[in-house]
Image (cartoon, rainbow, N blue to C red):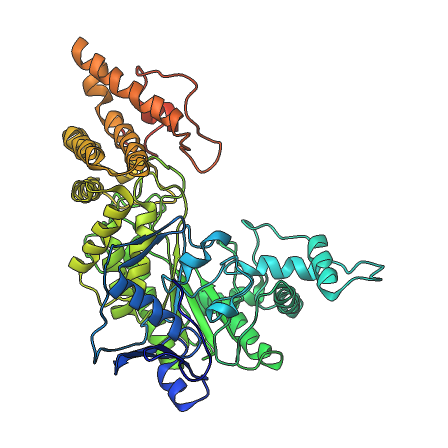
Length: 581
């Protein structure tokens, strides 16, 4: 059954009224670009909003009253309801705390449009041309990070000698294709060179224009679109005489902040009201240079994935391989929060909670997602979050993205409510054994907590992020939890997902137990170990599981339980001394 849709007065006795305001109107100013209000009067539902507010209100109603859950791009779950009642007199009004919310996990694929927006994400990198239908996006329409590389490439390209019959779009695309990109790992532009600045700024204008030809609309009048004007992800900052003079007093953050400020002023000639954002990686901060009020500082941080922001036990010794600790980020974040509040600039945060490379071992940091998000908002004044996801969904990586997305929309939730969201996700994706899986998740977290050091998930290996002693002592209990969840599973999809999780459990557990059960074990323990190892190996093949982000490591060509699986697959378990058993 589909409901009739009409403009103007309702043609039925009862109706949903969608009232869309201009952001220039008095009511639109009150609601903002994402706020909404819905109310039930005389049996009718009245929904008010501007760009995205009415859409978000509908999705909230679907979740709160109809039991709809947009859990993944390949699954929308609906609880069975014979009747649904939104009581007379119900009033709900909401404005999101975070003005920028993005998660790149399964959310950015072209087929995930109807998953991205129902989860109230409003950011960037979504491969959908018809943004206007969904109230437009809040982030950059072209490049989300490291955009200096893209802009430099555009400016270094050449227009074809013969442009007969070519559209402006084709000319821009040809120019970009002929450009030479700088070294992404060994180059940053000079921050005091007018020549370099002109290339970057003109490249930004042309890349934006090319992107708009692709159907990405630039909405800057209401401060919706925010364009990236950002350095590359490396430490090769310019050290020429002029740049060195500035960075000596203002740090490298201040050096490139003055470049960002220059661009955000100059771009007003072309797009009045357009904001830019500039990425900050360095932990230093400027002394006298302050961010323009039209600038967004996108701070990329969280140095330690094992400890929560604000904790005092982020270790002084035995820390990360790059010797970075959370206190470096906390000092810088506190500074940027105060400075942005002073000038009217915004502070967004780029969080990296995923396992980038070693797909058989998730980064054990799920509770940290809750506490870090609360800390960033409540203590640091962050009002935008970019969640970087990726990898596989063998364990809990997709769950991390899902619960963080819910937290972005409602950062007021308690930790108990956060855990309820996790359990519901586990129920939907894995079946009736969700309580066992939640306990398994808690034990993985404890194994991470007991590793005795700091770690960062895109540098460290599985052996750096988990306590082998804890995994060895608790392997049978953890495996038993998964077996129980498997027995309680409802569908083949549930069972397949749990089997992949079992493979990962076996990989870490058998790696921890190899010396005890095989090398120093007796005939019975070696036989049991071989049986478990063989099952794990066969399931790796059966499920065609990737073990690494590239072809550097792959499933071994033969099953060999005489070799520790950590060594057989990843060559070694750790890059630290005395961690690998």
